[in-house]
Length: 183
Image (tube, rainbow, N blue to C red; front, side, top):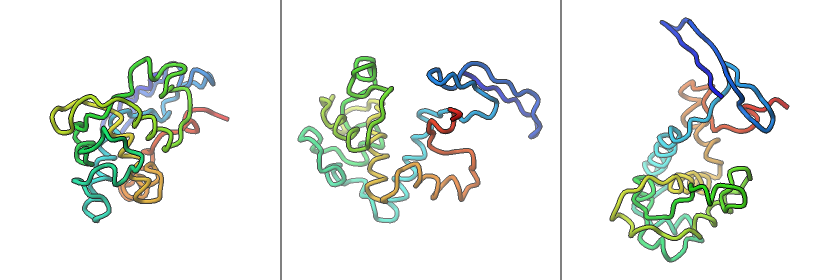
């Protein structure tokens, strides 16, 4: 689906919606449907990690095994900074084979954070940490889990409490089905 809102000086000129927000539930898109921002969320995750580092709660130079005891030996040398900069070498999960039906990261299924961390840990590494750059969503999934493990709050709740609410970003949050599926 698609929502288009055009404003001039804060006044709406056009507000139109097309298609479905959720195909399974046949939920239509409305002009106020909350859309997934995809990778734009990475900037907030990175800001949260840097804030936690500033507070002394996360060490950017620490091995990720400090925060992920389940880390495989292939992650030796991977630091939090490597996750932030897409230089970890940790395997990528977003190919059709892994995200499709029956795949380890099937987009149609819900996973716990521990299940996601274990599934990412099972992926083969792609290169030695710090030797290359490769955009990889798995890095930021791990950072989101790290935020929860360090703060005791799911990363979406932490982002809301620390960034979105204080900044008046009342329509910004980690999306859930409740945002798009009328029940």
